[in-house]
Length: 259
Image 1 (tube, rainbow, N blue to C red):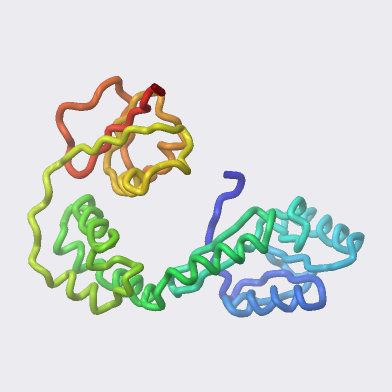
Image 2: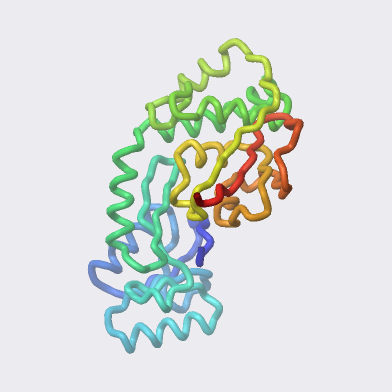
């Protein structure tokens, strides 16, 4: 990973935009859509977009801006970019950004279109309802770990809040009003890897890695695989499978030896 994806709140904040023509106008529309203040080169701003076609003029502007410490997006010049603008799937407040680090805007667009077709319009309503239900969730599930596990189960494929099913605010209300289930005891699931390539993980393995509280693994399990686990999951490198499972879901990951 060569860039850290972040979402920046730009409403009411200045962004420098340089250039004329269709590309520059498209960038202006995008900036205005999020409420940014589009300003000229001499303004005080942290970010700039350079959409100047002439190479010499563009490079001169990029150099001036970077000399001031301004972070620059240089249209069609990925080697000069401090940041890039992704293709966006908008289900406000849910935003999905698809970036290629400037390698191919066309590829990012087509990936976005595929994702767009998968996501129902109710996804934004679901997100807002979950935000508004935080206090009720804290009351029902007093432990943060219990809340996360309950939400994981609800949002899982086929769950009552499956985000691809069209679940909305009403579904969140029904979920919170349903009978409370007893907390499940801790258990361990085993993942046997046949490849060090994370792209070859099975759907089951990818799902478990995203849900597990603790990841037990042999020392030879590749870091690329372990990075697919939740960032806050506790990792334990050990030679053998643990005898007792802590609360929640734990994984035991091993590399299978080739036959």
